[in-house]
Image (cartoon, rainbow, N blue to C red; front, top):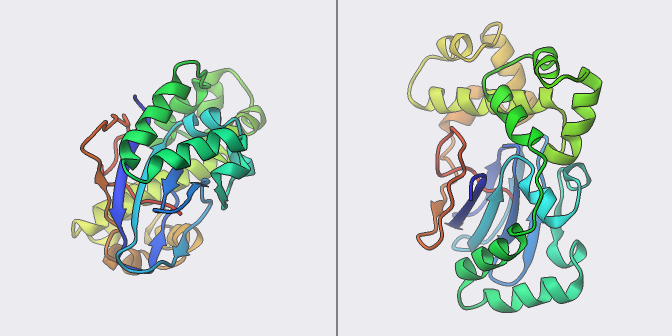
Length: 242
């Protein structure tokens, strides 16, 4: 299913969770909860060795599946039974204990059958990834910048400008981790200069790009059963959010 990734992770302890424009449905071994879209980085604390299995949704698929606008979940982690009718959430939780990956993919396929997703999400994500200015996005989509902002809130949890900044910083840190000097990273990613990159890193990541690139990336694995193509041009391991 394009736009959906099934992932699993064993935690090493405290980790910085970077924003990525996505929403996740996460099983932590006891409960199901929804990690809404983050507007900036935050810290996640857990016991080393804790295991997670989750579905990651791009392009507004998650909000459409749950029937909740993304901006109502921004910077929040919410129990699934607070969003869905208790019988449905409880039924899924009961199936998670023995085979969580299969339970999640089965639930997804059932709900996906009748799902209608706003196609705007995929189009805006593609333009934001290509660093298209907001005015250019709005012009291509035949709407005003204000209308575009309003349409993006329920899909991504924030407007197209913040989405573009988040995707650009993620791309910049990937390049920096490959050993490219920060001044060159800034130029390649469309920042005015290295200082501009540093300001965005502090605002969105909570630290300097030198610190962020040096942190060990939070690693996740795609689950072998039922992996779904996310159709997104970024590192396949992603960064889980809790």
